[in-house]
Image (cartoon, rainbow, N blue to C red; front, side, top):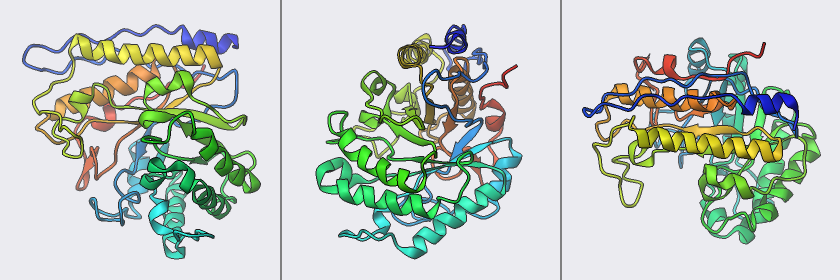
Length: 350
């Protein structure tokens, strides 16, 4: 471990004051620091980041809200964001049998979206999202998964490595665990490396890539692989009223109690432990809170501010979920009041 990384891990953070009995959001008191520097592998200059959630990972674009507009990326850039994460349900737009060809019109649509984001000056994290059949039967879909990535990698091979990054698989879950994850990811990574030898590739762990996946995350032996986690704690707050969760968490949960901050602090310690042990610097690919269930807007703002600042306080960058459709930061033609200003990232290194 380098002295610079050790110094980054030693940064102190102070949890915010507890919310009042009336549920008034606590003030954000985590202090963003400079990006942690890895002793092993690379880290990504994610900066301020937003997910394009419920767009191209829907069964069809527009099924879960509005489609991506060409003007969106200028709006996102003007708001101070540096990176977008683009979830894509590639598996729904490719042949079920070999050679597993991706639909040309869909591939062209993704290329158009990536070009729009890049043209606005944004970095792009391009992932493979919602491959449900792979989660259920990894061995049966291993070859198809690798073939999809062979095509995706070839299609974007001319994009600069510093501005477009691949994320092999969103949130491994179900039958796909750390025990068999390498047997699925490694063949796909090998296909990527045939056309993109030095492009950063992002890998997350089992159980929806939660922070507890880090201690046993099996990373490929590749210097350009970057680990990631997703963070939706406290879940009872962030997913209250979410009908896609069984059982649906009840509404009325506030954010800002001492227990909420203790949970955030525990997550920070787990990441610090991972960085100390491995020398690698992960990033948080998703965090966010629903706008359902009657959550007061000020509490959503407080949550996004607290979580993004907390991770930034240990030099870890993060990507908010999401832009306009799911857990939205923006509605109609305006950003939700206070939201963009609350979202923090690491500060420039001196």
